[in-house]
Every structure is written in structure tokens, then in C-alpha cells.
Image (cartoon, rainbow, N blue to C red):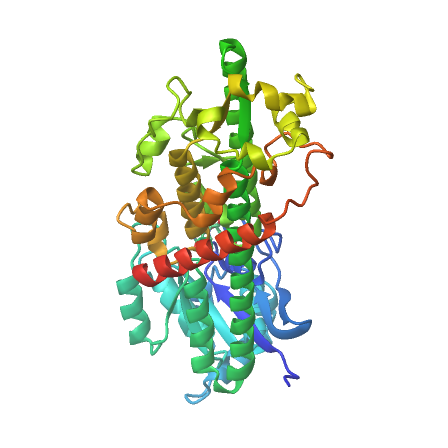
Length: 470
Ligand SMILES: Nc1nc2c(ncn2[C@@H]2O[C@H](COP(=O)(O)OP(=O)(O)OP(=O)(O)O)[C@@H](O)[C@H]2O)c(=O)[nH]1
Ligand SMILES: [Mg+2]
């Protein structure tokens, strides 16, 4: 049972991403103020990390350091005795200068003194300038363990090696690499592990915190794969019955079906992004060809298929628009007409027929229009890409598409998962199909099970991918 709360001061030069780091660790995108400008944070602000309602860790955001060299000059001008060490800082903090011209720095130093540990945030794109060495020298006088955090590491042009070398020279061998904006679950785990390593007595609560984070991550993945499964079932089971002899009506129906599917994909994308809406999700999404939940390349184009190494299917019926397949009802019978009631068929034909049972007799002249396999595969591959970018399994996730990925390869060519094949003959499973209360009641039999089965398959796929890419 933990009674105390581990106090962590987040300190560093101005504009290095301290407040951003807090936002990410707190999963709170509204904490503090973040701007690409110096001196954004003016006061110390704290927030707690809770697990099951209990505070385990308190994080303190502090203003950026700007004049550490000035403090060292002050100390040089006011020398004490040679073994004074940390007491020299106290002497400084008690002077009017500390409250006056060094007001910002003083807030930081006092907060570090009152904390158990400091995270020193570094913009790893910066060269190791003397002013940073001065900051570390002044912070050392607080006599608290200090863990450097190399931030901004996801982009190009970082100087991680130079920083590690300079920090080692100062006796700081435990260094954390963590991009506070581009969230990385593994990086976060390392951060907690390294905190544990320098704070032995806090090992248990830190492990508890990490376990809670992993539970959250699992829950998020489950929710995401469920959204994906839901999307895929809706699309696999979507069908429009069209009059074979009415060309104009068919084109209208095709356009309508495609639009419903596009909209459905966007809704899923939004749901998945929403699950990860903490810690700079915007940066992860920015790296993807996505705008407001829509992929840049339209779902129903050969270009979109090509991006994922897919080829347009040669639809059963000649003349079907890209991404759709047309089949004659009587020949394909993929709808399993025998199992459908007249009311169901009536619902599928839409109101303009309103024929109910009599529709059976007219089936022969109709064709069924559905989304082809290639498009289903494309939907799955896009959602996989999104989820992997959001989970940020390693920094490679924003790298160009890895077409060699074994699981992606499977999604491109292997037989579609069983649940999806079943969905093909279950129009009642799709929220995209016209639904009337008499035709079929809302929770269609078997759909929930199919969704669970498909979601867990998608989850396993992600495990495999993670294992293969480290
Ligand atoms: N790409 C990238 N941008 C970051 C990262 N961390 C912070 N930023 C950006 O850097 C700028 C400064 O971030 P803040 O969190 O306000 O920095 P701060 O250290 O709190 O700044 P002060 O309060 O002024 O000292 C913002 O524009 C952030 O979006 C990072 O890891 N990667
Ligand atoms: Mg700040």
C-alpha cells in the first residue's frame, strides 16, 4: 500500500517540450500551455497520475530556464567556503536577486528541491552549448537525482550521441530518449523503468503505474480492433439489389453504395483516432496521408489499391464501377435467397419497390451489387496502418509503408477471414443496408460473435507484426 506520492519535477531550458511531456504522461491534451516560443510556462503547475483512484506520482511542470549562467556568475561573485556544496544554492535562494532578476529560475530550483527526482528535458536537435552545461551545474546543486530526457528524437537531425557523451562526462549515465509529442508506448515504459533504476524505493508504485498503462493500451487496442471488425463486417455484408435493365438506376445505386462505404470508413478512422487522442496524436496522424478522417486517395480507385500492392478485382459482372462487383442474383445466389424472408428482400430493394413477398418472383431480373474483395482488403490494410502508427510500435511506424510486412502480405492475398466470408451472405449484418424493423431486428443473429472473432484475429495480427518488427 503506497501512502506517499513520488514527486517528479520536469525541468530544462525554455521551449524544450516540458509541458508537452507532461501532457503525454498525463494523457491530458489540455494540461498547461504549449507553444513554439520561449517562456510559455510561467509558473510551477502540478498534476497527479492516478491508478484506481489513488495518486502514485505527482508531476510538476516548471518554467524554462533561461539564465543559469547568470546564477553561476552570481555564485562566483559571492563565494562561500569550499565544501559548501548544495548550501551555496540555499544562500543564493535567500537573496533578493533570486526573487528578482532570477525569479523564473528560482521557481524551478525550489520545485526541484521539493521533489524526489528531476527530469531534465533536452531538445536533442540542439548542439551541447555551454549554457546547457551551466543549467546542469546549477540543477546539480539541488542535490536531487536528475534524469536527462532527450526529446525531439523522432525527427531528423538529432544529436543524441553528442548529448549522451556530454552527459556522461557530467556523471549522468542514465539517459531517457523519449519524444514527448510522437507517442511511443515502449519509450514510455523505458522512462518508468529508468526512473525505477535511480529511485529504488519507488520501484513498486512505478511498476504498478506501468502495469496500469499496459492495461490501458490493451483496452485501447481491443476497442480499436473491434471498430475495425465492425467496419469490415458492415462492408462485407453490404449489398444493393439493382434492376439489370435500368442502367441509370444502377449507376445511382453504385454511387450511393460507394458513398455509404466511404462514410463508414471515415467513421471508423475517427473512432480509432479518438481512442488515442492524447499525447500529440495529431503528430502521428499528420505523418499519414489522412485529412479529417479521409485518406487522400479515394477508396474506390486503382491508385488506392496500388498503394497497398493490391490489384483491382475483375468483378463478376462486367461494367461494375471500380471497387464493386455485380452478380446476377439467380446465378450467384450468394445472398442465399432461400434463407431470406420476403420482408428482408423487400428492405434490400428499398422503398421504391415496396413489394414485400412478391419480390421473390421478380428476383430473376435483378443483380446484386457489392463491395469487391480487393476493396475489403484495402480497408483492412488502411486501418492496420493507422492503428500501427497510433500505437507507435517503434519509430519506424511513420517510415514509408513497409510492404514486406508478413501480415499485410496475408491481408493482400490469403483467403479473407471466415467471419468476412460469412458476412457476404448476411445482408442483415450490415448497417449499410436498408433496414426495416419488420425485415430484421437490429442485433442480427451471429453478428456479435463474428465481430468478436474477427476483432481477435486482427489483434493477433498486430501482435505478430509487433513481434516481427521488434
Ligand atoms: N516534434 C516535436 N515537437 C515537440 C516535442 N516536444 C515539444 N514539441 C513542440 O515544441 C514546442 C514547445 O513545447 P512546450 O511543451 O511548450 O515547451 P516547454 O519546454 O514547456 O516551453 P516553456 O514552457 O516555454 O519553457 C511546441 O511547439 C511543441 O509542440 C517533441 O518531442 N517533438
Ligand atoms: Mg512549458
